[in-house]
Length: 218
Image (cartoon, rainbow, N blue to C red; front, side, top):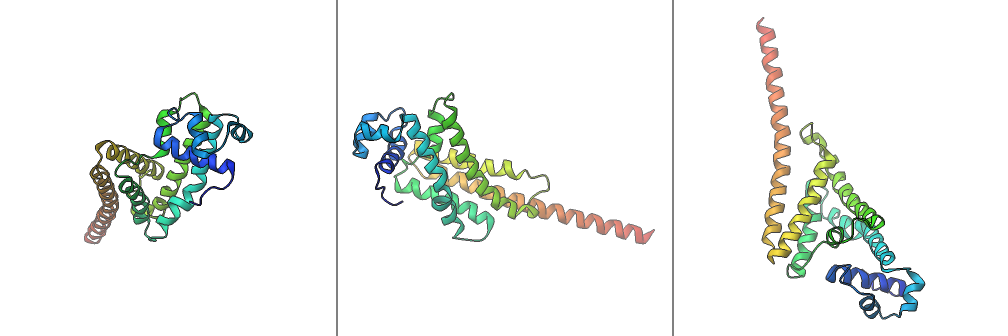
């Protein structure tokens, strides 16, 4: 991401880093001002409160989802399931780059922010829905190969839940192994779903063949 130049951009970028590193509650106004290199007057010129800055940070995550997370993964392959796995591989790289200290910033904020702070939680939810939507696009492309009763939205949400949980456990264990195990199981889950549809279609074909044979014999 390009280095922020304006005061407002510096405050947002500092908040992105500090909220991820220390948490929202653990980041003081003094921390923000010092990290961004601005004074309180400059802060209040752009934001009425730390909560307003939080909302701006969440909006930047939403805007960065496609260019920073989804599009680079999509560019690696055109096969839908591989695209999903490529998105997840991006998180694996972040885990390794931070010596297993990486934690999804949205997941952390979702747990930390007071449930009564609805404006923040609505933006967090919008970010999650955008992520789910990107995965849902891939699932929709293979829907004819999935069992007929597959709920594409639920499956995409499940992928997000696997990613969030795998990142959290890997951070706690200080090891990439839980992440790799989780993604391996997710990969197998997709393989089983696709194989199930093939088996279903094969069974239908055999059933139709037996009916035709029985009709001919009669």
